[in-house]
Amino acid sequence: MRKDFGAKTWLYPMPVLIVAAYDKEGVPCCMNAAWGGIYDTDQVMVCLADDHKTTKNILESGAFTVNIADAAHVVAADYVGIVSGNDEPEKMEKAGLSVLPSAYVKAPVICEFPMAVECELLKFNEDGICIGRIVNVSADESVLGEDGRIDPTLLQAITYDPVHHGYFKLGERVGQAFSDGRKLK
Amino acid sequence: MRKDFGAKTWLYPMPVLIVAAYDKEGVPCCMNAAWGGIYDTDQVMVCLADDHKTTKNILESGAFTVNIADAAHVVAADYVGIVSGNDEPEKMEKAGLSVLPSAYVKAPVICEFPMAVECELLKFNEDGICIGRIVNVSADESVLGEDGRIDPTLLQAITYDPVHHGYFKLGERVGQAFSDGRKLK
Image 1 (cartoon, rainbow over the protein chains, first blue to last red):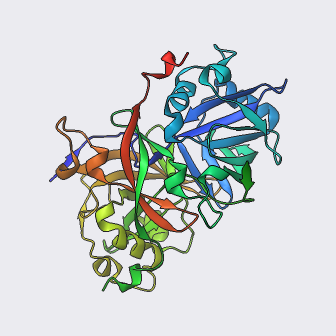
Image 2 (cartoon, each protein chain N blue to C red):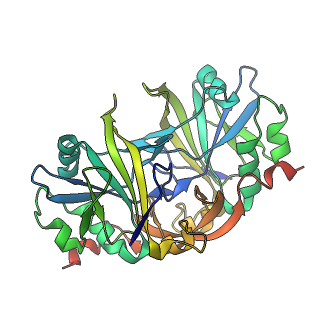
């Protein structure tokens, strides 16, 4: 039996994307975006309300980073989702977050998060959704496996539970793509 | 130290969305979409190439469902991502998937996946991305907690690892949103 919940903005997994940009003076700010994902090849989308400090910063600077929140920094990731940079000028410091400039785009990479997707602003599309062109993906060496690539079990990315407003981390590997499927029957 | 990987279409978590629709004759088909997510309030987006059977079906029927792939059906979820409904008329059967019609939209709900987001097609937007308006979310009773709501630990949703093309399931709860953040400092 199925239970109906009506029109809910629910999906699993929903990401915890920490979107960061510089303001005109080069001061970094960031926010937590749960509505977003890959939009197309080399493109990400994030749904950002107009009144966010970070939205204004992206429009002015033409660039942003999408930092992947991890289990070690769940409190900081949540904090930057509930406190506005419009009200709290020391938001980054209070969250315990520091930044380094991206070498590829005019946007800050947040040091504490282990992976960043560094983007040029492509546009805010017809629906006001922020679309970025991915210029570089960077990751901290601490989350790289023996093959030198990102290892999800080391990355410890978190995901947002829209039903109970909780955070979960990604768990164990359960299968390989493009391999077993054709053997189904 | 950080390592740069260049322009990669990577994000964590990426979903495993099984998009399903009926053709003109009412025959269901489905496909695996890793590029998608919540677009805006009550709206989902999925990036679907034009030549997919499911893309054609959505354009004709004006509706689709987004079924959340779970750990118990990882092989079926992968299969419907590598075999095209254009080539395999018995794709659903070969994947071991059965459907029931949604009570809300003219689209099939896949019985084996424990949660479905049932959508009317809003449009293919200026970038060709498929945007759906969520009309109903349904979930199997087996994944509901004692509070009658979806429990992520029972849902066992999976996520796609774009680096090694693997599937991971969601893991343990690591925090609560909107609560601890303000206590940071």
